[in-house]
Length: 136
Image 1 (cartoon, rainbow, N blue to C red):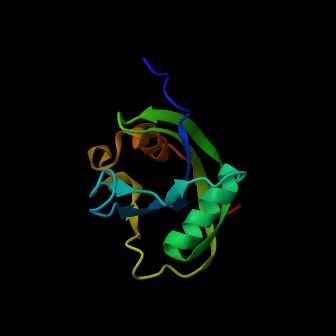
Image 2: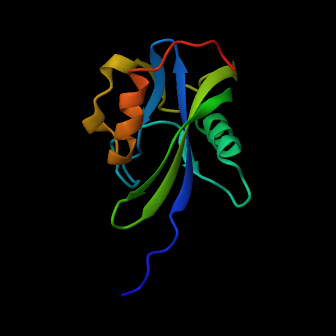
């Protein structure tokens, strides 16, 4: 039996504004197609989770952000790939949401966990208990 490789590091920007969170839908030609997602993606060599989350947020949505704090680091094995998710609570500090991004603000209370990849379950539960706080 061959040992499993190290998980692929992924940074995820969980962007909140009051009772809203920024979510999109995974492309139909991607892994877990059609499920909901937060902005994020693979970390580059030498890149911190914070830098990667803010880069992905900018690239995917047009928003500039700041990281308020780390929410959770979680490994998840999807069978065909192992990922290490770095979920970071972020706020928008500038920029404009690109209309072609596929991302939109949705009420946290309306998020259905079954419409997200399984690795997001803990973060979705955490979102419902977050206190309101000012931007970073």
